[in-house]
Image (cartoon, rainbow, N blue to C red; front, side, top):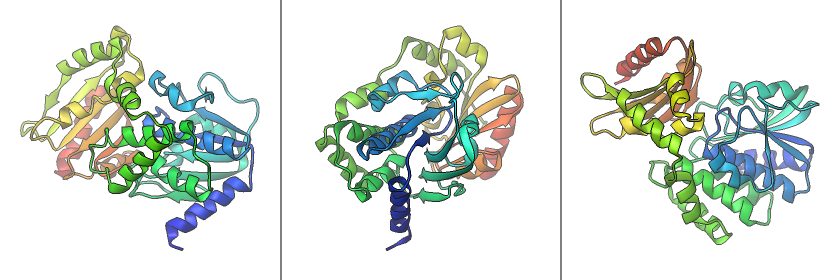
Length: 325
């Protein structure tokens, strides 16, 4: 067996030989994180295992349908009354991305780390990490096959949704023949592709369109127009009544402008912390820029949280990206 097959077998043993799991993804979860969380829940359900799904922060409304009747506990509002000794972390490039949920782990916790980020630091007792996978759900498809799971519509829907969102609707460079092969299988098992595309990629809330209108007024470029960025302050979010997830996708606007090599989104968390999303055309490895600042991700898509005022962080990141171009 090759190394990835060994990892699949080790992950399958971890699940078969244990029970009472805590399943967690990263803070500010996206479609792949929620799809992966839901998929692991459905896998454990089909295997007769007990489990709790948890995350730091609320699950965006548009992803609720990926969970069926499995609620994700919002750790920021409700802390478990006990700790867990067996944890499955999905789509978390490093342990810090789990957030405050780590306080619900037993001191001698055994952790299965399932992820597709090249910057993953292999923090699990068992690591199932494939950096060339388009999404964590692609790895979970392989794990389901290894576990010989009988496919259901809810499980297929979660897998398909993660592929759909992390490939940008099957448009990004991570859209491989294998992605299409898995997507085709998930459609055969009942995933409704058109419904998911409408809900996850097309539909916008009114606060989201208000945020877009206001955020466009902050669109800025370097003199050579190789770097573009948008700034979203907490005041702006509050003024238009937008939620954190309403800013998802804004980073693609500067990136999609002709001639721009790297697009940035600066989203203020508080007076001295800014969340930064980075998107590259491929000439700059933004995962390395993010990693140097305590974050991580992929060559073309990465993120980090940086201390400082909005203006300070904008200047720092633009300078760091300029040095890579």
